[in-house]
Length: 248
Image 1 (cartoon, rainbow, N blue to C red):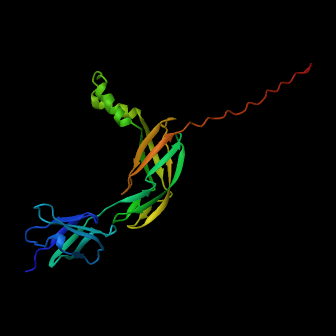
Image 2 (cartoon, helix red, strand yellow):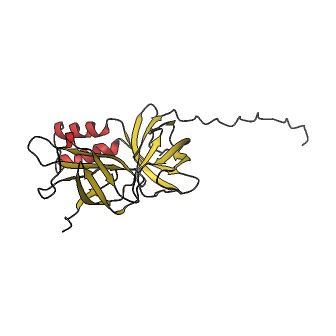
Image 3 (cartoon, rainbow, N blue to C red):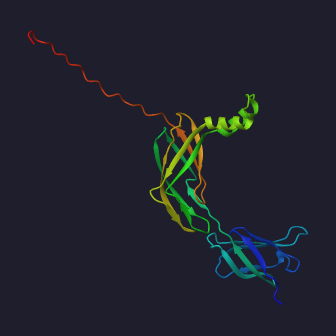
């Protein structure tokens, strides 16, 4: 009778299962281990046992392994166990640089080049336009302590005080634009030009933080508020006076 297969479920890099009593294997330290799953590339396989606990199988596949069900076999010494790997979707983009460091005044547009690499196992779509909220650095902690320590006004609770204080330190929403929406396949990378229009609430000399979170990506923004450009006044034209002649 064919034994019931061992089932490992998770993302390609995090697949594990604790073996039950019916899956008897040799001591891991003395046994050679191997795995074969047609259609999936095995990068690492371990069988570990801690104290008197049942042994556990830990498997890592190539990061770009597509979601799906893969049937195969795990070999531990002379023991051969039928196994099934159920790979779930993993959306993840890695950015270089990992944080955008921007400097500009309210309403300014700043452009920066970013390399995006898909280290997940499904395509990731980066939209052509999105928005990111910016808060002054330290705003969360400041609002928290303000709500705790300041006396409550009539009809004003701590939560309302907390939100009002945060609102005072918010610069607004920054527009994040790409020249086009980008679809990045697993294992691929693409360089994109990101243009950020800074909100009108940016104050000179203040640092603001935010996080851009399109599908599969978490990219921090750090904005240093620059001085507002001064407007030049138009040069005034010299006045010309004409003396009237007698009789005119």
